[in-house]
View (cartoon, rainbow, N blue to C red):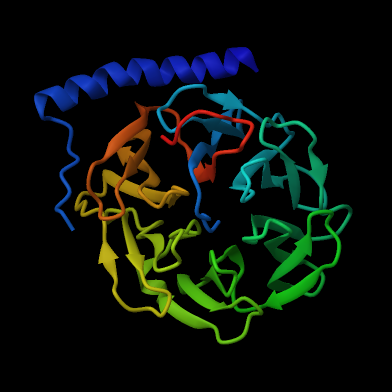
Amino acid sequence: MGSTVRWISASWRRAGVLASLALALGAFVLVVPQASATYPGPNGRIAFSALVDDHYQIFTVRPNGHDLRQVTHVEGDAVFPDWSPDGQRIVFEIDHPDGEPFCSISIMNADGSGTVDLTGDRNGCEGSASFTPNGRRIVFAHFDDVTNVEAIWGMDLSGGDRQQITTAGNVNPEVSPDGAKLSFVLDTEAGKSLWAANVDGSGPRQLMPPEFDTAVKQDWAPNGRRIVFTVNADNFDEAANIATIRPDGSGLRYLTHFSSPDLRAYVGSYSPSGKWIVFRLEDHGSYGLYRMRPDGGEMHPILPLSSVKPRYIDWGPRARSDGGRDE
């Protein structure tokens, strides 16, 4: 574990020198015109997945880029980390290399200890889970490979009391901060579209059609007024950019304005304070963990451009045991 973290940290440190030099020379192309759901609270650590020895593992880091930690060491891929509202636990998906379930949901303490499997020996796939605002339940995507039905379900923190919510979406359900709404992505042959519905699955509304090719990761602002998402996620002939929209589908607003396919921005989430958005910047084959203001301004590197690709990013609240000031 220690050697892996040291290698990744060293990679980012080496990249940091180049990024700083580029910024100083004005050569770093990051000019932006002014322009899980994350629940309100002070800012804590940021979780993301990164590739380690051909498999994705989950890491956490402070918002200033310090204290990088690898918190999973699973066989297969650990992806889609989502913080509990109190910052004490992380729910995540494990993609298994062999046998069923093909993917499953586990929950662990923030430091990676106490991992519990919530899926058991069920068939098919369960994943892209997130907490509800009260922290007592989890919503997730479930695929039954016997009936060939994909749906969003809810369950308690032990994996019990399972209830189907809707078949309208099948990726990354996120409950709004007030607990009244649910956002999700519908992935079909036509493309990926962004949707919202009542938390019981009723009243589904398409917010962004498949032509916009929405990335699976999207998030509610802590005040519940906007949803942030990525456009052109898999269209590599165009730039991927980050935008926000109101839950009723109005007020589309782009936060990044890249035009080259070699410059791409993929959103992770809002910060619990609501003052920042964390995302992955891709710049001509290099990757960085960045943050910006909710209007797209003040972009700053958290982990600078390197060969390490942070994915499935989620900014958690500061746990009481973590101490420190809001960053």
